[in-house]
Amino acid sequence: MSLLIKNGRVVTATDDYFADIYVDGETIVQIGKNLTVEADRTIDATGKMVFPGGIDSHTHFDLPFGGTSSNDDFRTGTIAAAHGGTTTCIDFAVQNKGESTIKGLDTWHKKADGVATIDYSFHMIVTDMPVERLPELEKLAEEGVTSYKLFMAYPGVLYVDDGTLYRAFRQAGDNGTRICMHAENGIVIDEIVREAIADGKMGPKYHALTRPTRMEAEGVHRAIAIAEVANVPLYIVHLSCSDALDEVKRARARGVDVMAETCPQYLVLDQTAYFQEGFEGAKYVMTPALREKWNQDVLWKGLEFGHLANIATDHCPFCMKGQKDLGKDDFRKIPNGAPGVENRMSLMYHYGVVEGRLSLNRFVELTSTAAAKTFGLFPKKGTIAIGSDADLVVFDPERKETVSVHNAFTHHMNVDYSTYEGFELQGWSEIVISRGRVICDQGKLVTEGGGQFIKRARHGELLR
Ligand code: URP
Ligand code: ZN
Ligand code: ZN
Image 1: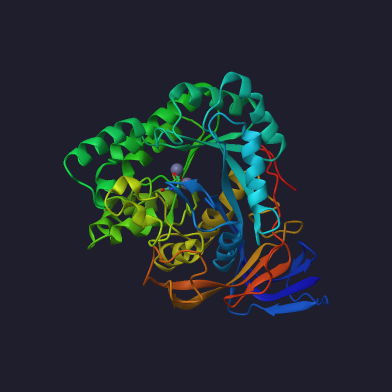
Image 2: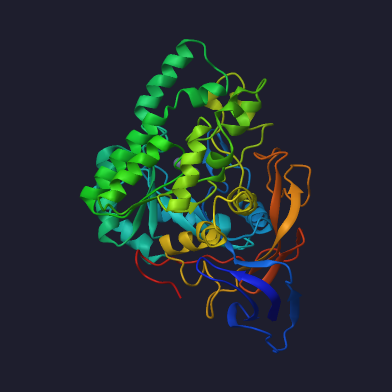
């Protein structure tokens, strides 16, 4: 199967020009002006932009969490991602405490194998790491799992102590792999939560009010210090606030290899979402929580100036009915997480590019290239170049749509609400191509399945 995309404005993290792109099989083989080659299908991209397929390096499909499981599995989640212009996800496999990480990886392969529509890869969530298990981390790297997430939050569930952090960090550094960190002081937060409950504070807003930004900043500070001593590249996930970003900036200024992602929700939503009537605030119960609005400007500046390196969604959807309502009388029982894998590209285009906060090149870098480079997918993924996978998005920069759970063009996630309900956004993915296969066309899924597991390279290595 061959594909010719004609007359598009081709935008990568570094380039911006008008050209035709010829795809043979799964790969980009020619880029040039007025290509005359014959193709099985020709797409006229006049007036459109052509971006590298989006890479969302933080998703949770079918994650057992909070007494239930996130409601998108690898079938529905990757279909929704595709509609939104994302052609690769890096999901988080989980090690059950006391069990092997290799078993956790196997479980995640079984969840994804044969059902994913876009390509995918895995980080490994490490929930314990006694000395005798350390060699597993090298085995994981050989299997293409070259990053691990550890948690300072959620005591009794995913939390690990500082000794475990240090052990895993040391080994990951030796193996040429990267540490992803959920940085929040969960031990202190649990004490604050205990006090709130004792005072009868049970509603969703107390999820936010019991998680001060200082406790995130403390986690970031501690993770950086441990990573610095252990000599491992560090990546802070879902950074939500100015206090935490200050810690990243300070460390980078003294030469520590630390980078951080933020998520669209921290850029466009704020703490007032919790103060709505009734149980509505449960839609936004996620960790870290949404912050006071002034933090948004600081995060946007962080993206513009490079202190923040990547945008991922932390997509972890739970329905209001039957899942979030487990916590209708007690915010501790509301499953933590919110949907967003489908909305990332348009949110970032609208609030970033259209509203003048990001250049087009920086938009592409933040939605695709940075994740590819950080997590060992580049140059196979994350750019438009000869020899790269033909993961491409034909994007209409003028199209306006209102995000809604009721709008069939904007909502394919398997969840009964939208985090961004009623947002009118400019800029939408119209044709989405994964390794040369057109998978979405004008909001319709035209190819289901066919997504492949991608073994990622180690830190500093290229993937071809
Ligand atoms: O609330 C969230 N973020 N749920 C997903 C798990 C995590 O901490 O990333
Ligand atoms: Zn987390
Ligand atoms: Zn997460």
